[in-house]
Image 1 (cartoon, rainbow, N blue to C red):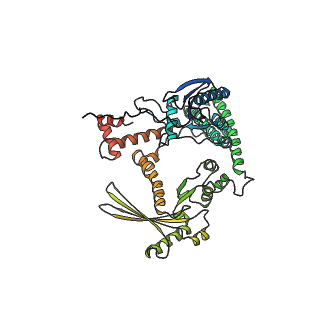
Image 2 (cartoon, one colour):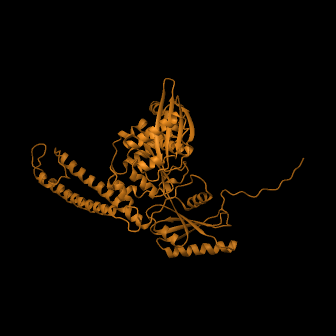
Image 3 (spheres, one colour):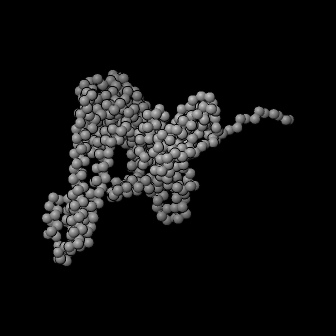
Length: 489
């Protein structure tokens, strides 16, 4: 029997009918490459170059793109631009936004590349890849890329103080180590270049075989001390500037300066306070235990329009005692005298079963009056029971939160907090002794951590149900097994 069907419309690889002109910018010192995709043109992209840093030529090119798109569809289309975060900073992004153009800055390392190409993620991405990434991002596809939140000019300039100090401290360490190395080669140890009497002590030094210090070596070290003292002066100036910025009080609002609030907290120094003040946490849920569970931290989080979930430990004193006593009494009565939200979760694996019962209540008017935590709305108890073939353990954990008393949401938030520790930090420490790692210089800690995480992911994908430690051991014995693991990197 012969049948006839309508021929389906030709499918395209990507959806391009999003009603906008999509543009990517490849930026360099001499020229900017503009790659564009116009509505009604299918997947065909055009590439043009304009002189580097020439905004007028770039705007002229955008006008040509608008006229061409208008000629095809007889209507105006907005322009959406994407560029990589890099050497050019954010000034182009700000110019485009000022002109009414939607602009995005993307982290190039977050864009997936073909594993067959075996190229570094920091290589410059071509314009077509950026345009396709922008299309996927505007379609709402998850985990396509990570867009950078561009800071304002004031915030960007404020960050420069902390970054300059970091560079100066690194240079200071280099000069100190260079001086110590030069002296050690002559059998001299114990000399500290950062002491105030460094020049006087240098004159009294003798080599390991009892000679006076060679004249050219001494002159070399004196020049190093000149550079070091210049650095120390610059560090003092930068730190004084930082302290002055932290001490500034805003004149147009009642709340004290955020960084100043952080600086008043015991255990947080001026450098850490400056960094915390730069965090963009609006709309986020901040989870902290131990040191960060403090009233001023809670005030800071609420001031930045975020929420918090704080774990109560022994350092909270009467607050933990009150919460613990309340839950102990009400749990014994099955919460007959108090409205409570409940949730239960169960996990099984690695030879154990863990059951968690979460209880949350917002019936805490007396508690808020007594302890006066900013934004406090609910308290939480997590009753955790772990069962193995040999033993059964029960633990109670207590939390305070600015969130409503929704046990399911609070349970997920608390679980997510410990998920970071269990899935990343704890695993790295157990398998690579990460806490004992002594790598400290320059970018080496970040680079080595990236290598360890990549290795950890490869071990997880390796065949077999052995532990990660066992897989590392087997890889040392069996080259074929090692080759299978390396295929996953």
